[in-house]
Length: 117
Length: 113
Image 1: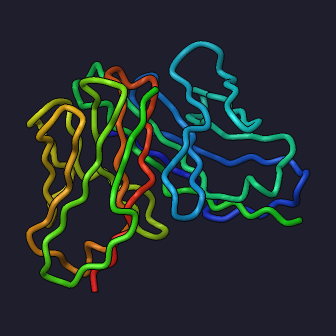
Image 2 (image 1 turned 90 degrees about the vertical axis):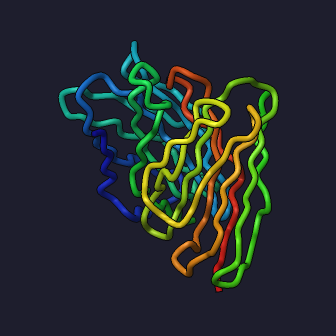
């Protein structure tokens, strides 16, 4: 079964500083990987995704993530954080539709990002 | 373009009362549909998913049920709510294949009192 670990529950960074949110996954084959962002009381918005090809993927809002198979990681990065980036971030892993399992995604428990002005 | 609608946004229900949350998708056909529950500090828990009309898979035993009476409609129900059913419920859809991830609705905050 697939699983996701986000080891940091809370992270605080200063506005303008760089950001890296960690994500480690467990899956037997090449996974489909996603990062989502959630503002308070809202649904989740897709930031970026990886399923094959270039291991460095670009997303919306200036975010990027790098897939490292050897480390089973898919860390999210942003070179300069804005106050509006304060939110909760979720990493997710999926097995795709070939298994017949309905493209189920398994989510991490989330990292709450606080941005200090 | 595709859109997903989920309602109501907020709901306060007494213990033992019934529940019906509705989710509809527009602009696509034969979507995969999902219900997740999010409890504070516990991430997202998949409750049900559906790959077609009348096809429901349950991920965890619980007090809830789901139905898909139409291709783009997904309903979450309970006959008698428990206090433990409180939480933030999210509906999502995806195209077949898995590469596109999910698109989520805006969620329903359910408080059982």
